[in-house]
Length: 404
Image (cartoon, rainbow, N blue to C red; front, side, top):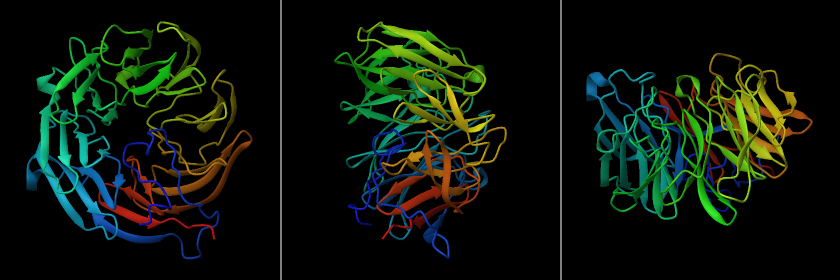
């Protein structure tokens, strides 16, 4: 795989964690015989997304309980041919975990290390080359963390030489910062008392670094290194589904919820300067798909109206796609990734279709779509000139069609 063609995908939501990928120019025409599948490998169930670095593909799954007992696995495949290079397994009793078919979070690859968290709070660091354990912790028991209804899902966030974990430790510690080399807890911050499903968002504001963290009870601005909460906006969400990672552009923080809609917060230069700018509890209700932002506009998969374009500063809706990107349903899902400077987007929808489309102020325009795997909620990966996706039965690799 030629690294000059496209960036590796070493973390959830891409190399910058924002749903953008600098890749090759993709053809707007689908080849006559469809996309070329390079390989597929068997996989067990799970929601964990795909990460790719230096010709290695990583994900997690849960083997059949009757054969392996209650375990979770970390898997590493050869990106060129799909062969399994190594696996790392550990006991994980799910008990009454809802949607308990497998791990949720994508793995984070940093230099030669693999960082991950399982559905029950097992957090670890492995050697990327051979899968050997560097350190392993049970944050649920060791840090009195709060298990969400659907399990821990926030991917590890490497920031300033530390590992940030959104686990809802009690009595305080919405976010824990762990030592990369040892896993030791270095500091904690935030007091939502419950864990959300997404990692925190590091931002720079007024010359200072801070974290935006969305928990089930409030949206918080938290100081890096620990200390008193900088600001908070109450937002108690039904069933604790604070799922999508916040975004921050033009001095505005945005969170998008499923049951209770979206909140936009204007952040000033002073640490405590945070005010609710607008909210929409009816027409901007995202679930698992993080919104994309470009030139003042946001694109969100709304649970009722499908893909929706709206202004970040006002919440004014410009258009909806009437469920063209992915089918209407109780839990609509489609990942969205910028794949060019002209508004082109790659998206894997819940039906397992890869869709190449264009988003702009004027509407939705589709180039092509192709069935690539079975039904899935797991986030795919893009690296070099290839695309990687998973279902509950397989991991697949396809060549992207390139423009001449």
